[in-house]
Image (cartoon, rainbow, N blue to C red):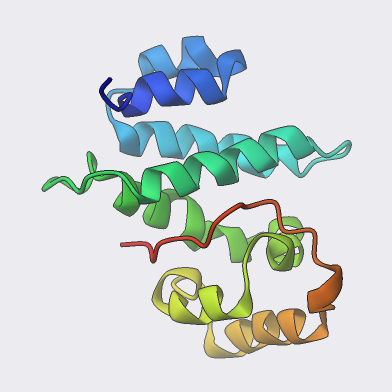
Length: 148
């Protein structure tokens, strides 16, 4: 049985967005749509299910076959459309310790810090230092592969 393509997998993960996904032309467009949905998911009341599903779909995308064109390369799309923006928004930044270890964030500093000044990245580091590692409710099942 062959691996599902990005659109099929997205429709499975986000059935409520099926019509929207039919309009997107490539994985880059898909991730732009998901990034907007992710930002809205942090509005009150928070949509924990959507947040978790987006992170899970990002994990799936990170381990897919690499493509030559950036707009077709799932790991690049996750990095550019999603990961780079997580620390730029207060709610998702403050929630990062629930989804990432500091080692993951530090290892992907060029991605997570892309839109941050050095002092802002230091604030992010302090956020992780202040979080209680033992009380984290990590939702992922396996470590993430380093993004593009």
